[in-house]
Length: 128
Image (cartoon, rainbow, N blue to C red):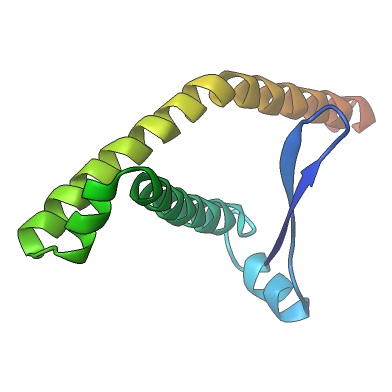
């Protein structure tokens, strides 16, 4: 799957997803959700990895003690540092969900409502 991050003139950002070929279309056609669940999971995993990398790089750039702890780490230190990073990105994701989640849910529900109403309008009197 190819994912493009798009930004408009107002600063709104979203992603566009496209399968890369007929083989991918055949595979997703066999899945109950058409591959939506798998794509969402893959994007979530990638977001977690990217946010983890960013969090560690920023902390290491601004905290010389953290950088030295990484350099001299034993398994206990790695676990402690890892737990700290996880807590930091958990907070980041929680803030993002609380900020973006309500609008995302409302726009998705609005889109589904419009699509359902269009289907009802297109159906004949005996089709409903």
